[in-house]
Figure 1 (cartoon, rainbow, N blue to C red):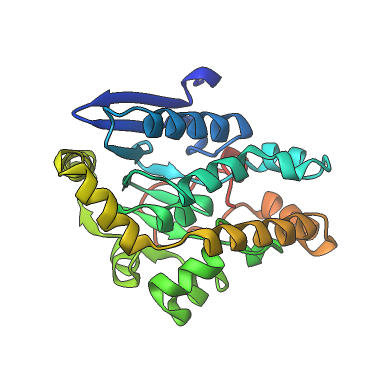
Figure 2: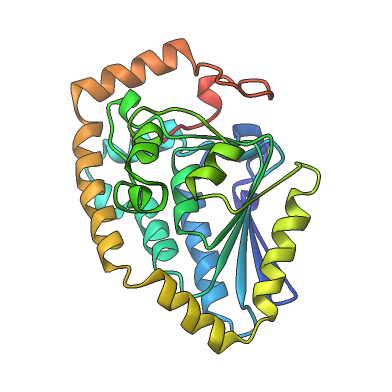
Length: 271
């Protein structure tokens, strides 16, 4: 069992801070404490002048299976949703001042997919599965994905991913525009790290100006994320969502074109 302090690991080399989600026994399902640690890692990277790029990784076979359901439901039903640490993390990744590279192998479920829409360069293994079953759970999309998703992928592909809840392969995700490059699982981390180190070695002022021009004003994305959060909280308390969660916990997760063994539903999150 991974100790709480070791669920988010950080290291720095060659101008790159690596932030690794390290809860493989739960498929990197994210708890409130893990979100806080992710935010702390981003803050540290952004305040350190020796760090020029950020690399986000998961574990072999699991980038992230989304929010830890038990942890999420406990906080969401407490009436203190505005203080949920997930929102602090999302605000930071949406407004990140330094480039972020992600390396994805295996499961990228819920926020494990939507956070990628805010990264600058995403490398996915050919064993990856991207899925956002928000509506199936009686919920709505999050992380500003209802705005930025259609901008990146086009409306119909965004609808397939965010509303239909269809699983996307690495090639589907690349065709949709939120994955940059596909590699083997074996080469994934090296490929993602090479991209991050290349970014870290570029002339930094030119990189910042160019990235800012491409990304533009993020206030609209931030506003949409907050709007989604209000609706998400309302949906969590709805009978429709409660019934969907009960059905999910009883039936487990349906296997969808994925070669790794499907974990039991209590082992991970999906939102």
